Amino acid sequence: MGAASLRQFWQHWNPLYGALLQTLVYRPLRPRLGRQGSLLLTFAASGWLLHDLPINLLVHGATPSLWWPPICTVSFVLCGLLAQIGEALGLHYGAWPFPGRAAVNIAQILACSAAGSAICMRI
Image 1: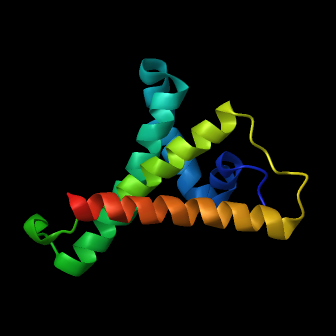
Image 2: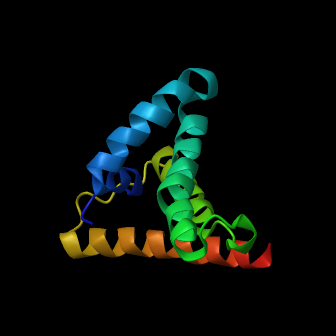
């Protein structure tokens, strides 16, 4: 939670998922889509394959017509966009004390989750 940027937060949040996504999604896509495009698709893959799909399979089984909208996928893509925007603007809060860094990271994740839920509920 104490990362100096949202991008850094995601790089350290779950090393196992990060290594899998980097190897299986990001690296193969980067030569074709560049850094930004492959990063967004990696966030989308994480949201769908590692979050929405398992949750829906557990709750609704193999009946996709009962699956709810892909809230995690949309939320993760928004987090990826926000991380890229923060990086492009040079937003880093590494000099802040831990509680401030954690508060900013949590607020950004909650904002993306709320926006993803709002978007999906309108679909």
